[in-house]
Length: 339
Ligand SMILES: Nc1nc2c(ncn2[C@@H]2O[C@H](COP(=O)(O)OP(=O)(O)OP(=O)(O)O)[C@@H](O)[C@H]2O)c(=O)[nH]1
Ligand SMILES: [Mg+2]
Image (cartoon, rainbow, N blue to C red):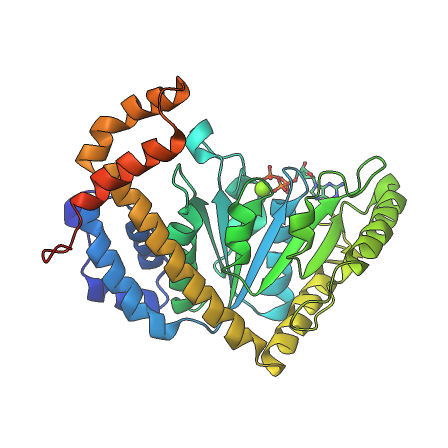
């Protein structure tokens, strides 16, 4: 584990990141992921100072159910970007499973074998550990650090469960859903809510005997998406097939990413969307901060399990219970002048 002495100063973090040092970048991400209250100020200062150097990258979210091929896809895409397009990319893998399994179900680095050893790629798992708002608190700042370190493309991978998708969607410019052809109903297993926020859907594993299934799934998804109201920016999400394993269709998907970026920029939507996202981020951080100090509040802590039990046993209404706890919390947070 990292020792206290090894902590850098804010300037050392900032200079290292801006100079493109991967080591400093990795350490800065560790700093912002820290739960230690003593790290919070330093983390905030580093973030503040690198902020003017962010914003130049394409921010891409990729989601899909476990096994849909996200890691394989990112590996193939990343290699294509590095080799054929002279790009550099950072990959942040959000793993909402970590609080429960104690490990990673993303198997992040292992399935990005080629990318993991590339100098022009930076791969980092982003634990969503326990906390609600792990993405807001850890992944989004990590993305900004990667941008400041000069990565012009940041890919945020999230497994298609829970709330992490919405959180990732709200920090990226382009949201790709990777899916696979199932047996029969292609819409099964894809939550409608996700289809409403995609910029592109790719049916992966369109290879071998699965090719025609994938084509059929593509057609079904395309007609389903057709029924959705047009997006505010006027972008129609394309539905395509690809094979991450065979490397087919991946370059075309990157062309879609670029076309979308141009589309957003030309209409002034990119800046507007990012401004809205920044604002939403602030709101979320406030909510998380409040929740956090509520949970840490000594008075609340003392009463919490007792009140929970009382609600479970039917002796106290949820309403009264919440009120009591909130009052406990707020009474010690009143401004000095009082009411
Ligand atoms: N045939 C075929 N298999 C693929 C393709 N892409 C991925 N796979 C296989 O599908 C399995 C899952 O791939 P991953 O890339 O690990 O999928 P993932 O979405 O990252 O999975 P999680 O991280 O567990 O959510 C692996 O065995 C891959 O080799 C593809 O295009 N065609
Ligand atoms: Mg994966």
